[in-house]
Image 1 (tube, rainbow, N blue to C red):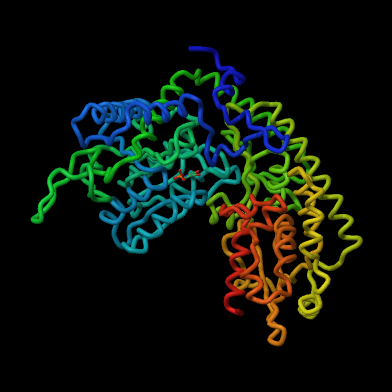
Image 2 (cartoon, protein in one colour):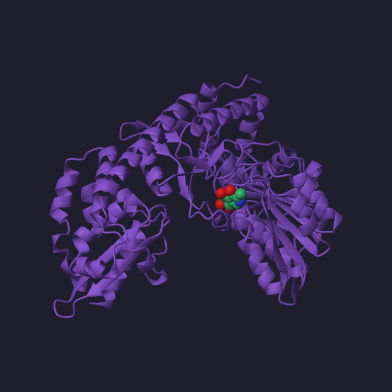
Length: 572
Ligand code: PLP
């Protein structure tokens, strides 16, 4: 096996050569999904070109070829996590589906009124909501383990909270927000002593740790292939055979059936009992290529390199005065969540995006954790072994620049602008007299000279200043726009004589305020019909801002436009 070299490793990921708008892609969103090596990409093409057929169903040579390739990966997966048998490896479409499978098949059938399901404060929604639902239906109670200030599940608290009533423990191996390894082995032991069944959400651990399910002694372990350089649409549910044998199927049809008649149906054996319908065959085969790719990595050396990255990023970020980490400890994987004093997380992420750096901002599907930290989101920077120190240097340099630029602007703002927190009377005045709102032609002129994404982004941020802020007391739930990662509000006034609509909008994120100004440049003081007739997509396309109208909930502009159109329909 070759020595781990980041440059050689990196070369295997073609997407990392991307240059967008003169910026080399720096991909720091690996906790969301990792990039794919050529071996995985080629596997997909080869399968469709040479082996494509449905699995298990036919005896023709192509089906045999596909089925053999497909089932071979189950063997590889068994070895990868040290399961006892291939019967313990169930294909799902991801971690989320794997947890749902266990929640429905085990939770709904074996948990009862008064039982306790124990999770932690730092779970991904995928490991909260299915259990919340099971609790609601069965009458079981959800118990939440607190965290230490260092961001790991508090073992001392767990000792008293995992009681005889605990019948199920479902916790993450590594939090997707805090990046700390939880003491899962000890927690599994505690739960076992009380006779509880255990599930570990390994979505963030699988790419970084050597997982041995027998050593952990968990009942279920779940992960997604796409977070470990593998394909999307595939997850693994590991379950102890004796439990899986006992559990009823989760979905019905296809390969999970042994015999069907109108007088009754018998189910197939494990693992097929839990795999209804045509599976994601190509993803399974590609996962085989991913596991071979993994086998060829010098893991100790890769882990050493990742540790160097962790230490480097942590030290560098610690130098940024405005930056505050969510947990009071260095993470165990290269995943850093932080806030920046006085700066909205979405503004930081969109600025970094304008420099070619892909990071994540928002609640990271962990709203209860954010709530416990009294935050509405954070910036999350997550690296993989193909990221380099040079990328880190560039990122930190840009973040420094951004923070100092923002600090300077907010000082100026304090001196020159006292409009934040205006009163209702002021809002009414602005709403009714805002005839001077920037026009679409002016916006088009501004953007026609801003060619690069960098400049467009700067322009959006400058436009944000045009929006009169809404007083906090006026930001109510009814005006809140769902679909935005940052908070955004929209108020409307209808003039029954002119039939015109006048909007007042606000958001916590400056970038959203800027985009709202652009939206309102065409919708302000227009009738419902005029709003409906206007082609906003064409307008955004002219401005070179189509990425902001994407269905991604990343920025929520689409949600704002949809809310305005809905209002326009009502006032047609
Ligand atoms: N659990 C954790 C800890 C995660 O980080 C994620 C995804 O980010 C999930 C569950 C859900 O994974 P998937 O979307 O692949 O089902």
